[in-house]
Length: 191
Image 1: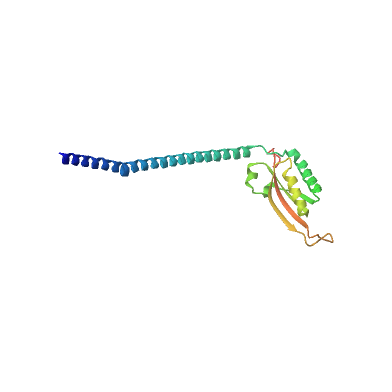
Image 2: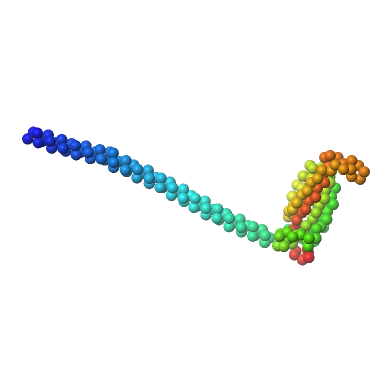
């Protein structure tokens, strides 16, 4: 009987050892794997939520941008037709302040095919300047800070090497041509 009790205890001990090994080697790693997988799934879900929020924010920004562009395109122009002469005088003052010689001419609207001119009432000016490069930069800064909305359509700069009016041109002198668009408030003034 002693031998049978030992056999029962031995079988029970082996059974409990097998259960402990099963729990330690199979079930516990399985729970650990489930836990890490659930954490990874949670992180991926948070990343997807963040991506979705960023996408929605981007879409909202895009619609806001398109709305702002529409509002800007629908804004009345800033140059009143009665003030066109004042604008030309202001440009001449800028040229005098920056020690540039200027020649300003208005480009007729019929010659221009700009899409902005088809939408809005725009005056197009061609400003020819002669002076130094730093003076041109000063002129452009004055023009940018002018009280009228304007858009430099093109800028062409050439160095003067030949003689002008019988005098040898200074190597630092330049000739520049600026094509400038200025928006107007009244649609009837450009016709």
